[in-house]
Length: 457
Image (cartoon, rainbow, N blue to C red; front, side, top):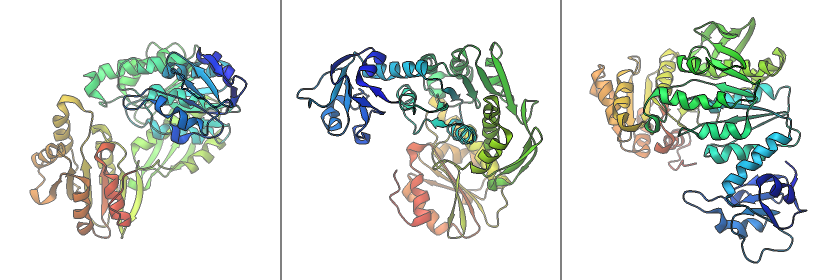
């Protein structure tokens, strides 16, 4: 957005200290990402305070938004003073949303948000100028930051709205009032903060409560919790699904394991290169969303052909003739179960090897969730390697389900698991690598695909 600092002051409720006529085209909160056209917002975080980096940022940026004005600011730089820089970032998003006519699509759900966001942006982008949120910021900062950086000519903006606590989505959606709210599914993710799935569903309802009057929600007809919370919604409801009747229903589905899925929707045939029924669900959500804002079937066909997996979220790699399925970005019991089912459906020449790291943020019952996940591992899996302390419970569950000790291996960390796998896997094997991001299993992927032990990104 092209704005003068005087406009930024008005839109954030701040005051101009100097340089009101200077203008900026981007908003940044990290001094390392500052560009010459940037306005730097000095955000106070849990660990760092952006005010320590204002001088560094102003070496490049046009100006800064601060709550404490630094000394000796160069005369050619702009400064806006506000009471709270995070609130200012959010107020700017609210003002931009009121001022510009783009269609805002917001996505929430327990799993699949990022993939669905990418798919929606790809499908909608086939016919409309589309801008999407990037990265995985804390949502109360990341979501406003996305809107603050929307280009002037954007027709559609696609943003995720996740949450760890009740009230977060209400705050975000209340700032921006999306035109379209998209629900993927609701399951036991971040349960440590909520206690029950019902409470998670209640918090996810905050999105549909804050959709623009007359807006649309796109809902998963196969997810009971999503259907329950959408009952009272007065606007337009568009459904998608596989099991149940829906406006956009996947039919004639042929699952090709890890190679993807071919299917039809409303008489149109598609091939999706991403594997698994969950990715088909995400794509059905994207098709329903794109159609709801007027994208043609031809545009959707062009978009589906371009859909690719996001970084470390289900990428197929070769490791000396073995196939690695890199899903190291995130994990929860629901997503793990789906990945294992997918593995059992794939046609494999060699063995099926599941490398499963700890799942984080599951609360006090975390060991029960790990044990249950272990009990549910399909019998077609030949070897299970658990990585991290919680995965001992997962291996116990697998043992209870009849896996022999010769098929189970435990490792404290990614490096030792990687060293073992380097000598263990053979050409023809299929290796699933899945864990929560904090366990760092992307390191194993690097060790197996390019012999590099240091794989932190």
